[in-house]
Length: 234
Length: 111
Image 1 (cartoon, one colour):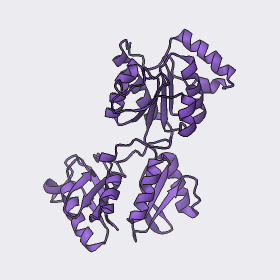
Image 2 (cartoon, helix red, strand yellow):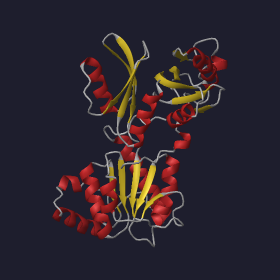
Image 3 (cartoon, helix red, strand yellow):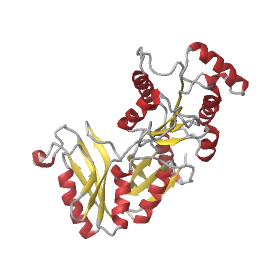
């Protein structure tokens, strides 16, 4: 591999853009293909399939063998709310291999002392998402209990097609949330994607247990989704 | 979002770029095919330098030693090779996969 190819590949991965590295097993020729780039013929069809499935594999096209290495962005969890549950969720997400970030404008909650070694944005979701929007490889867990903070992020997550969207709160709280999101113009089929009450139904009571239930629900969503991130490799 | 928080200290492709940029000789091994119960998925990487230091994995530790030895040769010759490992051959107990799977590993020099 040429160093320039590797640099370009690593730049795309860091920018959370999906790419396929095409390698000829016959002569070693290589080519980096970004999602949406036009590639002609049978090889182009195989590459399009690879983006859809997320599966890296050897394919035959034009009488030659090519290895298609699919690099989809790693799954990331964004917690809206630097609360007690989040303190338990952050280290568990790291152990499970998920990138993790927290957004909470309440500077009393979002402190490095409470969250050592975590990417922490002590800002409004509106400001953070203007810089770095959600994408389909992101899970969003809204746990502030405060509509002023949660609602914008939930709307953005549903519109971006995040693979998981969960929100803390009782059924009664959620019913009011559904009303507010409906008033914001979201169609019912999108709002129905919100997991609420948040987390798998395992009877979780403590913040740590709720974090386990949330992480398990996120993993279940990630492993059962249609395309995003199946080819996670390292 | 604009930045990934992938753990760079354990990412073989990031390490490969760092090592090469530092002027070290580097080879990259990639799992390109698997059959049966192979321990690491297709697309997994092992990065090796000219002195046999390595990061990442192409199996659960079963064949890394053999891949590292080949990689040092490939760094010298510059010619990529496609290696195949399984349990069906006589060397199984030295460099085979005890799990019963088979894997193909493409090893190339980083130029």
